[in-house]
Length: 89
Figure 1 (cartoon, one colour):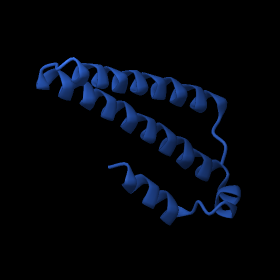
Figure 2 (figure 1 turned 45 degrees about the vertical axis):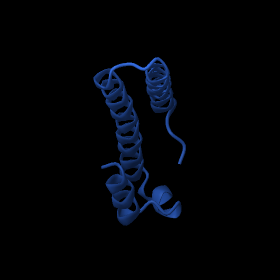
Figure 3 (figure 1 turned 120 degrees about the horizontal axis):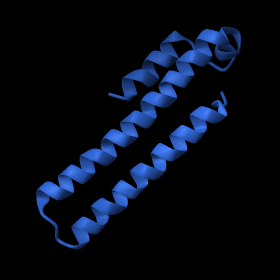
C-alpha cells in the first residue's frame, strides 16, 4: 500500500519533529541536564512517534475501507489490521 502524498508529507513532518526531540534528549544527557528535563523531552518524542503510528494506521484503515479488494490482495484483512493496531499501544 502506498500512502497518499498528504499522509506521507504529514508523517515525514512528524518524524522530523520526533528526530529533533531525540537529538534534544541526547544533548540534555550529554550536558548532564536534570532528570525531569530529560524525561519530559523523551516523553514528547515518544508521543510524537505514537502519533505517527496512529496517522499511518488511520490511513491504512481508510485504504482498506475504500479499496477492500486491493487491500485483501495485499494481505491487509481485518486480522492483519487488528494486529498492527495492537502493536501501537
